[in-house]
Image (cartoon, rainbow, N blue to C red):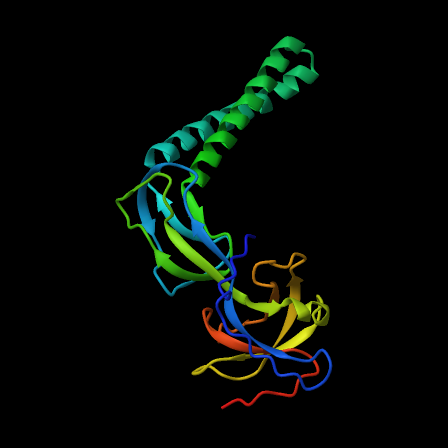
Length: 245
């Protein structure tokens, strides 16, 4: 996932109490943001969610008009069922040598082709149902029923459990942070509180121009109590606890 650090202009708040102990300003962001579109062009029939709604992975969030495609699928289903019934009638006759092997092979081939046609039609119908790829919330709704979908996103979704905390640190702190380290996150008002997070990424390249590197922490948010977009203070191990109003 491409990461865009938006903290480059933030002021570092470092207060060292013991060696390698410090705190820094951070920003709480969604774990991932997804623009949901359609793999198929067509006219939107339904959009079942709006801004602020919660969605589950695999849930249908929108559909395209599909009456023609569904009719074609039902035709293929009928052809598949007929081929199966034909095979059921021919099997006993073939075992008794009443029909030739060539006739039996032809019937088996017709059945296989009918099944393949039906699977193809079913997949086309499935493509007309747009599903969420994540558990998350709707950030923005771009389109409404009746609009034509062509290379345009329908919804913008954000996964907020877990959350990410992005921090930019000066290069002299590089050897003080490691993956799997625990830290305390103090969101700004009005949310506040103290929440434990885990370091998951420490950038392996230091930006020469600014003399900084990026750190990402993962912050569990199972009840969605914390919104993304908050500034925060991150207290790393060994640092005296900051004051919380």
